[in-house]
Length: 155
Image (tube, rainbow, N blue to C red):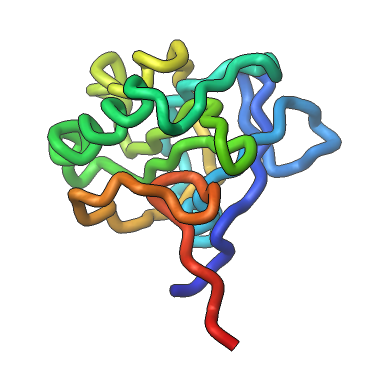
């Protein structure tokens, strides 16, 4: 597996950035989304709030159900327009939402992660194509944002 397991992204409620100097709430994302060759002019549906208090434990049924829905019908619905998707993690316990990135925003009104936090659509050049996760795995590894993460290499 190449790339960084986790990367930090900043969300101010209207704009995504990789630069902490630009402000915004720091959110951890599956690093593969930012390590791949970027797709210019795609759309990100950011289901997250900029307030630090906006968090839900990953083990809550609402988060589990959103991830199940993503595997069951959200990813297939997006089809070839999907660029990547990832939950946002704050630590080993808390989810701060998710981002779905696609070439077209046609189905963003059906995003299952919007059940957790309201979605905002923004244009972006930050993300690259990551293959959709093979189901049915919804477990996370060591607090990494879903669907990314990996176990540490053995010595």
